[in-house]
Structure formats: C-alpha cells, structure tokens
Length: 284
Ligand code: AMP
Image 1: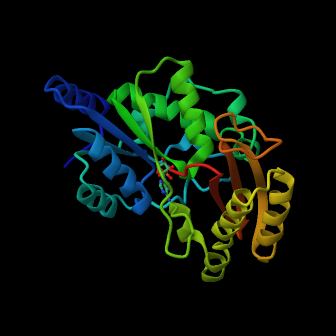
Image 2: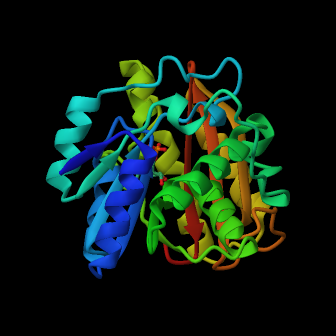
C-alpha cells in the first residue's frame, strides 16, 4: 500500500491506474480508524479496483472551541488498519498542501445545512463540502463511500454532487456499532467509563422509536416525546437535538413514512455524539 502526501503525486498515480482500466474508489476519513471506517473501505474494495483512503483532519469543518487540536491522531496504527482492510493507497496531505496561505474558495450547500448539526455547528458543512470537493477533484474517483452514521453529511454531499453535476457515484455504508449498540466513532474515546455506559441509551432509544413506528405510530411528536424521556433519564445526557426529518431534505416531517429519519445529537459530558435510524425503512 502506498502512502502519499502530495496532491501532484496522488493525481499522477490515480491517472495511471485509471488509464490501465482500473475503477477508482475513494473513502474520505479524518483518521482514528475504527471498524466503521473499515467497513466502508471493504465496501469500496468490493466495488472498485483501486481504493484510496484519505486521512485528513480537516480544520475548516471545526468551529472555534471545537476539538480540532485534540482530535485523535494515530497515523501508524491507521496505516496498518487501512492496509489490512484492503485499501491500495492512503492520501494524507499536510494542511498547507490542502489550504495554502492564499486559500479563499468554499462550497456551500444552502437549505440542507441549516438544521440539525448545522444549527449548533454553523460552519461545519461548508468545511465538509469544501474538502470533499477538493478530494473529488484531486482523486477523481468513480465512486466515493460515506457512512450513514453522518446522515446529514451524506444528504448534503448527495445534494452537492447532484447540484454541481459531479460524476462521482456516492455509495452509503451502514452504521457499525459496538456490541452494546453504541455507534462507533473516533470521539467515543473522549468518554469517561460512566459516560460510555450512559451513551448506550442512544441506540436503545432509536430501537424503541423504530418499534413504535413499526407498530403503527405515525405521529412524530409521540415518538419524539418518548425518545426525549428515555434519553433524559441518563443524568450525563444533555440533548442538542432530537428530530424526525425527511432523510433527503432534512426537514421535519408531519407524519412518519419509510423515508423518515430519527436523528439525535446528545452531549455526554464534553463529548457530543450523533446517531440516527430510518424509521419503517431500510437502514444502510
Ligand atoms: P470521520 O473519520 O469521522 O470523518 O468519518 C469518515 C467516514 O466514516 C464518514 O463517511 C462517516 O460517516 C463514516 N463513519 C463514521 N463512523 C461510522 C460507523 N460507526 N459506521 C459506519 N461508518 C462510519
């Protein structure tokens, strides 16, 4: 497996592979690789011939006071895990390579980014769509794989690709969870033992909501009220948002259907966790 830091080098390498007839897959990550990332890499390997995993802690998607500085970084371990997942190349540029001093261009998807995570992280999606566009332009993949774990990010990227007539195909990987149901996340390592235990309430509440929807409840407020009650039963939990939205538009629904997404963001101490489930529909 190759590890490349320069834009010109990765561009050259991928161009060569494409000229040889290889189908190119891209899996964008911020490193601190876990089994969730591994599942996306394996999916890319099944669908393409040459898989590039980008590892870049993107400063433009962190707001002031967020965890950019302390975000977990472990390049050696990441390299071993990405290699054994079957990827062919890691692209891990320095910040100065991606954002040289005179950098001044940003991509914004408007409506979809206003609610949910966009409300408490106003600059976040602008940073995501900018870096993802740059990665698409650098690697020019046939497909790019993103996790359902970040449901709003996925909807925003799909919208951007559609609106800007990008040719890359977006593929979704389902959420990988720990045995007790907590969605894997690089940020789980910030949790204390007690917070980690209490955080399992998220998946329990999503499953309860899913069962309510399956049993015929169609009123969003009825489900939201129960979910709120279960989550606030944990004293470390502070709700940022709990909403039922249309999974593509990210706007609140008035009646539950198979495109309704229950999305939650909850603080456990100083750590903000997100999770989601598609009610009445296919997850993954
Ligand atoms: P990150 O490194 O957190 O920026 O995530 C990189 C990619 O991995 C994104 O597409 C995420 O949605 C995806 N991802 C993160 N956690 C999980 C998980 N538990 N299961 C599946 N995919 C995930």
